[in-house]
Image (tube, rainbow, N blue to C red):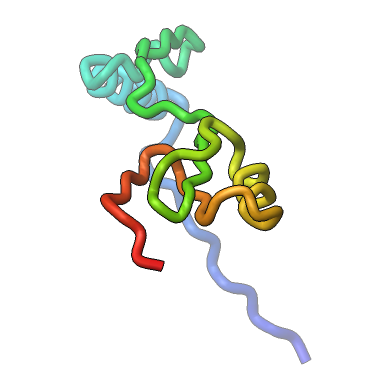
Length: 103
């Protein structure tokens, strides 16, 4: 049994002359919109930006039962190890200010 073939799609008006014309029109349209022509040509100058946020190590403190600082400016793991060893009552970030402990 023979299966009939489907008709092929025709590309009307897309010959070399009309492709070049449409390419020129597209370049003209895009050239004014943020320098898209420069992007296609490989001339790209990134905008200089400064960082809006900073990333750094968070420092911790070990506080006693009365809320006083026993050890300051240590890493998180070291602060928790000191509390586990009985040096101080709580390990907190340096930026976490507590008025008083109620243990």
